[in-house]
Length: 202
Image: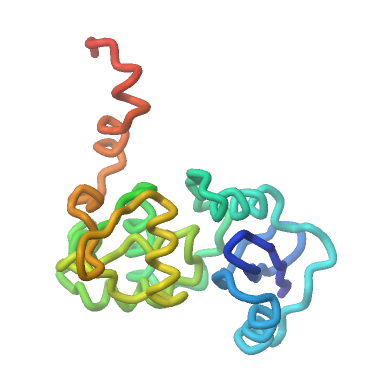
């Protein structure tokens, strides 16, 4: 087991992966001071060693770009999902569909996977091993307040604001930044990319 450190504009991040060749990521530690990241890595993954080579490839640049405010859609093939239990994996796949600059309620995520267990969805996201790659920061409560986040609510709000999400009074997300459906086709057809190239015919 190995770990790699990446410095972003939000702080140092830690990535844990099984080997240095096929670097399926098994854990992502959110940005903080370098000393704090190293302590967290030693505590949570005591068997992990510093990777002797750059085994993250393009992933490192993607995270640096993301925290610099660049719109990034992280691919799922870079993570090792064997660390997730089946229900959690369904939740994480649904959460991955929330687009950049949008949020969705825990209930919306639950409906996407055909569940009414909203609290179980929240627990699955709270234990998300891959924050940012799986954008659990985009899950909010039905009353439009933030709910929880591994990195704390200040970081959650800062990340959402970086993505362009706006807040009303009492820390509630403005309604236009809430996704009511998690449908990738709907997202595409309503996106500026599609609307700006549509010529009026099908």
